[in-house]
Length: 227
Image (cartoon, rainbow, N blue to C red):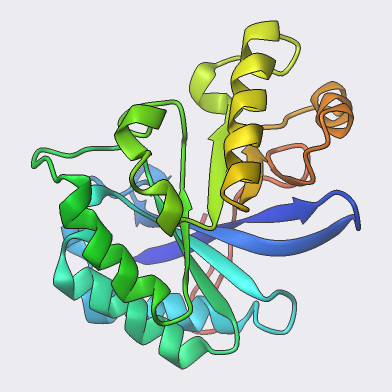
């Protein structure tokens, strides 16, 4: 069984939830786990599950975010499934987050950009996730920046918090980049009130992390009780 877990994204200025990130998990004998292979769920089944899940959220929020790596983005069947889901979910907006994972097959940015445009030309959002880690360092994604309307900086990837001066310096650099390209910057991985306060001082409005809500299962009506 596959289901999406959801985690809220917060606008700290209005203290309101502006969206949810959806994380696909599979129910196994060891409980809910990230799938060992996303090929285990077909694109049509993924679309149906995504639509069924997000319809439950449509009265609460205006956008939902999903993660794709480069291989998934370049898979026409997966990309078409995302487009199909967006068409069925309007006026809710789907945001595709490109993760830092490269995968076994390297793709150039020149190859990625047409796929990104397939999404954004249909009114979808495009986010560069996990910036400054993996294959989402600045030099890796600088030609993708004009095509993105959002950046995400994930504290958990660095295994530290905002009390570390070097992390604040890195984050400030991405604040500047986001301002240059008129992008929304989401700070992920906030786990306590101290980091929440530092984020206030840094003027970071959009946030995500355990401090505001852990990922949790959004059950569907046909589900039996699982844990």
